[in-house]
Image (cartoon, rainbow, N blue to C red; front, side, top):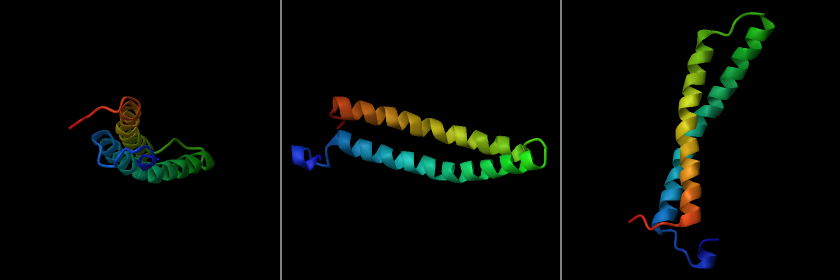
Amino acid sequence: MLTSVGIPLTTSWVLASLILYIVIGLCWLPVVYIQIKVAKLAATALEQHSLLPKTYRKLMTYWYSLGWPAFISVIIIFYLMVFKPSLW
């Protein structure tokens, strides 16, 4: 789409957006693993009528910590695509 409207991929805001997409991917790849692991821990606790293990809380802390940079990156990408600032 960019090339069809004459915007090169080397435009600063486009490059910044692509880098932020990579950051988002790197944040969310571990999150998928964490969510699968957390779901298994919750299912096991439910089956055994026991409390969630300490690992659950530790994994959710990682999940939460990875969510913030990804979320902020999405907001920045939105800004870059709407306002198209010249960054360098």
